[in-house]
Image (cartoon, rainbow, N blue to C red; front, top):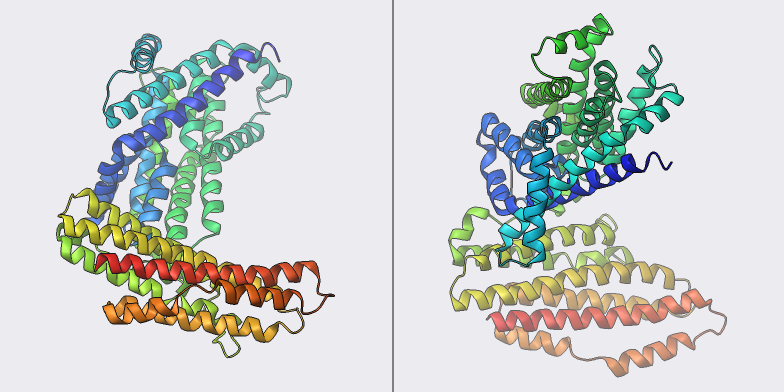
Length: 526
């Protein structure tokens, strides 16, 4: 283990460097990347170019995929070409594998020295420049880590040989499994490919074995995307399944030469006039291009297939904004009107969250938990939309309206969370003898008050607001009497049921307070 310390240290530095690089590059390119994604869906060529550029800038295909998924869920990007952007990001991210194949010893020294001076002396840098310095620090760390990994490759090679993984004729399955495990553990075939290039350069593997490692890593990355796509709503699943299909297609093209002869691919790569590290990097790039190209050519039939196996659900539609349009941000009044309509649409759902616990409620409605999840998605999209509007520095009146609406949306999101908890608590409290009538009355009262909140917010009438505020007044004494009566009703009531009864009254009061604060925020806007 002592002999393996340089290799382990190098591996740790490499992983830290990859994380530094990806997170800080994403911050540097954040606004540009978001704008790029929104413009990328005009054609397959634009989507492919945007994906490659996003992968090059962020060096994280997972980050690109998750950004596109979040944009699609929030309605910021539309169109069937959305999956092509992260699909082609694998090609752009391949730059990391080529970077590892270069001799960067002097570059690492200069980069780390420059970053260290900038950070130690706390030079006055803009936010973007500071993120750039941290991204360069990540580059230096990952390259230094790979150098240490190469230095400590001797003991690592001996350990692998002791497990029989480097013996001729016995390496195929073991090396494939190592590649699969490495890709699943790092959640990136690019990172696994970079490690394979480094180990190849250090002489741990020969080219044939490194190709097998690359093959396993690409297949393992596809499994990882398929696992991530197994859960979640249809839009996100489609995008992630496209990434799994990209990896599958790339793995198949790498398998074709092996079907002819075990050394056929190695012989093809040896014809390239360069070193083994660059040959392996070239193989990695080719399979990414082929996988992305295959998904692009099969885009329509693959989309139809995914729509059949993972059709959009009503719950998915609930989680998408209906009125928010990015193009409207250039017109402040229109953008505010659309945001208000989206906010009112979100409030209209609040009474529906209680249907499953009302005496004559409509049990065909989605559950309170479903409404809560959808409400959080729409609410967060709405807050992001308003933040984008404020970034454009509108006039004073527009700022007041936007900030008041932000507070209203925050209250609405909190009401979604509170109501979901209230419904769950009512189910637990239903076993208390003599409490059913009181709990039912609280539920019906809450339903009526939430109806009043939604209607008052929609009408924006000052007189109606005053009436609604009076209905949403303080109920401290009343709720204290109810708590005392409920808890004293039956001494034999289990402690968990008593706790649930007490919690229903607390959640009732919290909902009323949030509804009142919501109307007060809208009043400030008016």
